[in-house]
Length: 184
Image (tube, rainbow, N blue to C red; front, side, top):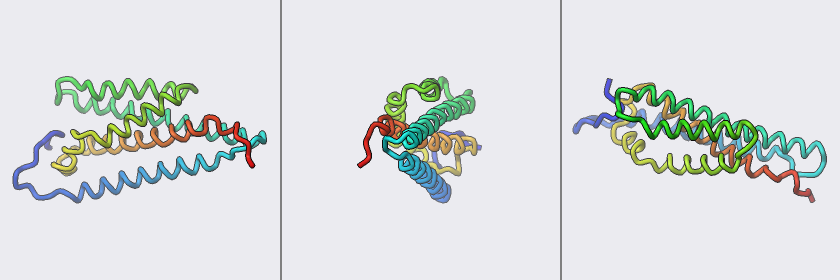
């Protein structure tokens, strides 16, 4: 089995089948979470009746909990990544920082506070993850065929948790004061 950071052979055949499957899975996860966030936001009626206020507060709580559990899940995936990298790299500082930060942000969200922190962190992670040259360069140059299945699983799990955290922290933030608006 090739190491996760293997270089492609100069005359290696194109390995785009795995890339296509991974991209389909990534787009499917992105679409599912995106539309779920929209449905949750749209289900929160904005009005002054007691029932509508409770429904809005419940939708915000669900969004906050989904964002928090996504961050905790991302922390656990980074813990698994660290265990996979031990012995292959000198010091997995990057994944350790991601583990700690995601755990802190997730637990703050789960305990009812810090939705602004979650929104900031999850937005940063979404932008940084998309623009991360190390992962994407390796993904596009080598292809998934050379990656161990554990690495592919962890990469897809990180994507799913990061997308979930991002979209649901946006919904929780947008619903922050929704119950104070009057319906016309």
